[in-house]
Every structure is written in C-alpha cells, then in structure tokens.
Length: 486
Image (cartoon, rainbow, N blue to C red):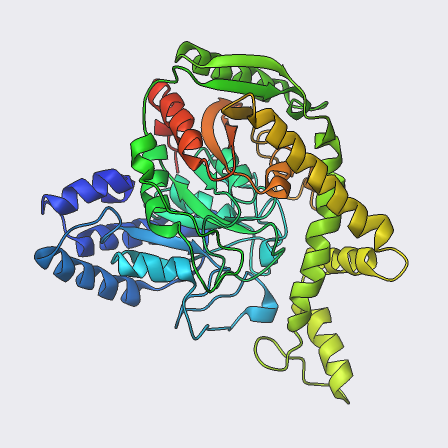
C-alpha cells in the first residue's frame, strides 16, 4: 500500500491487528515519505532510521505472541527536548548540539514499553522559547499549508511532522501554548494536559511550573490513545499528580447534551483577524447544534494581565534552569580562553541564541535584588487571581471555548525582529499554562488557505470533557480530514 504513512493511530492499529501490514512495512513507508518531503518543511533534526527499523522488528515479534496495543508498532516523532537514551537531544540549541542522554524520559520509557517505534526528533524553538520555530539554532521549520509561513512554536516540528504524515503522531511540550498554537497553525490536534498529569522527568526544563508534555495527532481519538499511555503518576517527578488515569477513549462521545460551555469575551481580543473570529464563532454554533448549552457572555477580566505575568514567570524560571549550561560537564564548551570564568561566559555567549539570551536577561532582572517584589512576586499574585477566576468559571461551566490564536500563520521573518508582536501570538493559550489546566486545539477552518484552530479549555484533570467536546465537534465537521498539498 502506498498510503500507509497517511494512516491514523486507530487505522494503523487495525491493520496491524488484522496482520494486513507489519510494523516494518509501516515504518519503512513513514521513513520513505519523510525522506521525500523533509527538505521542503525541515520538521526534523534527527532521523534514526536503523534504530526505528530495529524497534519495528521487535514490535512485529511482540505482536506475534501477545496483545497488540494501540501504539504498538506505530511510528512516532518526538520533540527534541525529551531525553532519548543513545539518541541526540539538542533542544535545537548549539549548546546541546551533540548531547546524547544516558537515560530516557518517562514518556519515552512508556512508549517503548508499548513497543512504539520512534523515528527521530523534531525541530523546535531553542529550549522551547518561541512561537514560530524560527528560533532553532539549525533552521526554521516551514508550514506545509504555506511554505513561506511559520508553523507556530515551539513544537512546530512535531505539528508539521503530523500535518505532512511524516509520522503518525508526535509528542510536543507546552509551556505557554507550544503544542496548541502550532497545532492550530498546522490544522492538527494538539492537547496540553493538566500540569502534573504527564511526567516531566527527562523533559529538558524551560519553566518548571508551566511545562507539560502532550500529544500531537491527526484526530481526537488518536490523542486519547496517546494519553492513555503517557499519563500517570511518576515518583521521579515531584510535581506529578498521584491520580488514577481513566480510559480516555471512553470520552469519545459524538453529542454534547447536558454540557454547559462558556465563551470568555476577553479571548476575542482587539486586533483579532476577522476570519478567525467568524470561523471560531461558527464552530461554537456547531457545538450548540450538537446539544451544548452556550453562554456567550462570560468574563475572565484578569486575562489581560496574563501575558505580562507569563513573561515575568517563565523567563525567571528559565534563568535559573539554564544556569546549568556552563560548558563544564556536557554540551558546547568554548575553549579558547584564559580562565574558567571567561570560558563559562563565552560558552553561554556563543552557545545560546538571541531569544534564549533575551529571556535569561528578563528573568535575571525580575529576580534581582530590589526588583523581586515589584515583578516576580506580583506576577505570582496575578497567577493566583487567574487560577481563581478559572475555578469560579468552572463552577458554572463544564468547559470554555476560545480561538487558539488571534491570527492565521504569519510569514517567516515577519515578526522575528519584534518580540512583542511574537509574544502576542500566544495571548489565547498562555493563561491556561498559568492556571495549570488542560486545553486542546482542534482544526476549525481556514482563511486564505491557512488553518484556524479552536481551543477547548477544561477543569483541572478533566481531560475527558475536553476530549469529549473536541471529538463531537470533529465528527460533525470535515476540517481534520483536509491535508496540505505538498
């Protein structure tokens, strides 16, 4: 079959289960397709063909003697900020360009336990700091819906890989919208789980109180399959929640009867692209047709402070986390110096890119003596108010719905010299990370041939309702079936 790479997880699983195709055949088809189009989109930084085929052979052996689980033998790509034993993990940064971890992240262990196949690692904004995947130290990734446009970020490589069928699914990480915003820009499904639902052990830290790993998939059902594997408590992650994991596939119900959905007006921001506004409003009307009760008059007034609070909190944590890259134990090390202190300074000067250095400086300033109370402490108070506001909304509503991004994908280079405009790309997504709650982006239309995403926000640890609403909407529309002509 020539179109094996186009399968969803559920489609691939069905063929594998019925012995109509082998994992080796599936993996070879994905690798062949990846090789054909990778030069056009640059979604990957590492492709491990030999290792992937070995994993596929192991999966085929396992399937002859035991139960075939949904991810067994199915090819995936991983964002390059998750540790993979024996495989480079670069964070798309020069400072980690040749770093090979001695251990696997928990999510990678879980995928390997299912006999999943890992094809390689995807490109990203350096250390996950960015909204366009232009901040990679290696090359920008291109949006398959418009090759002169950004794919969003920082998980742009993962979303492009799924949108172009380079992999059947991928993992990304989300600190302020880094799964959902590029998922919206690339017309795929991207889920940010509740903070603590998926282990962060082995995820290279950007902002430890905001980072969360999640799935990037072709369908909502596929997202549920991946969540069933990667979610759960991990004693190696002190922030991992000790709650049982439900079977998320049981949430895939095609109607929305008895659900109350609120529409926060603050997310339809001034300056929002009109086509985005009308497409998301049409999508909300579809939710109403499916049986949901919609309240268009919800207010979350502290939303307007979220952007400012985020760009104090995240850089502050980044400045502490990135202090470890001193060139002493691992990673890039600048050698042509007279002493140790100069070597450390030059290592960071030449090892980090401009955006990473910008955020380190922002965070260091916010944490410095005399400014801590004025900036960091105040931002933490705003965080509490934002979380409280969401809690109050969820006393009345089962979920909230917003646009994923205020615009469709913008041109490569258009905002790279204007950090404030770039930061505004995440204005709809970052309050969710501040509050630590789950949200998903699903395809909801197009404007001028470029994708539009709708975001569904849920209560803490209620990914089930988020997936339920997303699935019902997806089944009632055709946006998720459209593929870029590349």
